[in-house]
Structure formats: C-alpha cells, structure tokens
Amino acid sequence: MKAGIIGLGAMGVGMARNIAKAGFLTAVYNRTTAKAQAFAEELSVTVYDQIEALAAEVDVVLLCVSADSDVLAVVRAVAQTINPGSIVVDMSTVSSETAKVAAAILAEKQVEFIDAPVSGGVEGAKNGTLSMMVGGDLGALEKVRPILQTMSSQIIYMGSTGTGQATKAVNQVMCAGINQAVTEALAFAQAQDLPMEKVIGAVSGGAAGNWFLQYRGNTMTKDVFTPGFKLALHYKDLKICQAIANKVGIPMPLVTMTIADYERLMEAGYGDEDISALYRLKHKI
Image (spheres, rainbow, N blue to C red):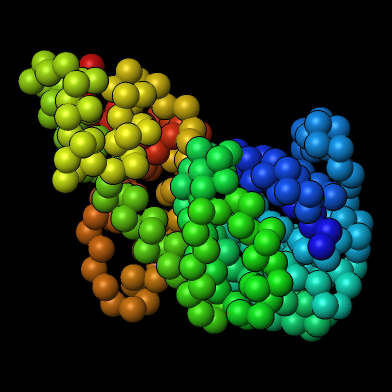
C-alpha cells in the first residue's frame, strides 16, 4: 500500500516518520510548502503542492489537521481525484458529526472513511506509541492496520463512523480533569515550599501517578510550556465536548471551568503553549 499524509504539524511529523520508516509513506502535503519540502527530502518521499494531486497517487490518505472545517475542506479536495477503493483515515480531533459528513462525501466516490483520532502527545507520535480510537468499517480498518500499527501501541475499534471521535471526546474531558488536578496539586506543593522534583517523583510512583504528571510536571514547575498539546487546540476540543454534553443533557462543570480558564490564558497570549500552561493560573509568582 502507498500512503500519503496531509498535515505535518507537531503530531503529523512524528507519525509520518514512523510510517516512512516502515516503508509505507510515499507522499506528503502541508499547507506550508517549505516545511513539506524539507520533510520530503529527509525521508525521500514526494511532496505535493496540491491535495488533489496527492490523493490521485496513493491508496491510503492520512489526515492530521486542526479543525472540523479543515477536515471537511481537505476531504472535499481529496474526493475530486481519489481512486475508488481507496481509504481515507482521519487522525484529527473533530466532532462525530464531521466524521459522518466526511464519510458521506467519500462514499459517493466508493472510498472508505475511518475516523481514528489519537492520544499520547508528541512523545507518542514520535515513539510510535499512540493510542488510536477507530470508527468506521471494520474491513477497511483491517486493510490499513499495518500502516496504523507503525504509529500506535494500541488500536481500539469502537464501532460505526463517528464512534472513534466520540471516544476521543471522552479522552479530552479526562485530560481536562487531569490538567486541573495536577496543576492545582503542584501549585499547592509549591505554596508549601516543597522540593518540586522530589514531590513529582514521590507522587508519580503512587496512586496519583499519571502520564501528564510524568511528562509535564517538571517542565510546568519550571515555567516551561513548550507544546506538547497546544492549549488552543484542547480548548477547541472541549468546545466540541461541551456541545455534545448540551445535546445529550449531561452537566459538565469541569469542562465549563476549563474552557473559562483557557479563555483567560488565550486572551493573555498563551494559546500556543502546552495545556500545562494552566499552571500559570494556579501557582504563586
């Protein structure tokens, strides 16, 4: 199978390198052409300056872009030239409804669509240890599984189109809660003048240990907020979660609080920092 990837952001670059290492990647496209060109030269793959041109030359198109509108715009461009029998895998984080619309657009071209959002951060993308939540046709998943395994330590099939994105929404709510808990707890430790690295080491080995504390604890307590996972993107995801919650009638006060906190940080110019920048609102300066 020949695969092409659209979107070489912080996550896409790591995923693309692993796909290339396994011999599947033949084509790349990125909105910033210079970045795509440098990457293509590094991996000896073809760079395309038009989405339609890439889609015509591969069997599997992988998407890793930022927003619902971006996904639909890319899918509509892909649909112009993609060959029947091809498969599109979207690894972006968007709404379930967007996934269903994308699937319908491609079904008219006899192309399968899989929603396959991921969790694990830039570290997981780089190391090929992402957790992938998949919705769509199971047969299509099995066809592309060898490609997806180059990026993932686990691939969980959730069900029909949109269920992968619905599961990712659950993940993003949990990430909000973990972010709130870890940043608040570490600010509490700092206020007591405890040695922060020792606190993080002690807590990480117990019941409160978690990925976010392990990978972001020491950086946030040193006021380093390099993404990671951009705060503005998590904000976008939580707005999706909030809309779903309103639709199904589930109160989500933690999500509401995190959205408000993120809005404060974005207004202050911190939207492109890691979500651990929430620590800025918690600790003494």
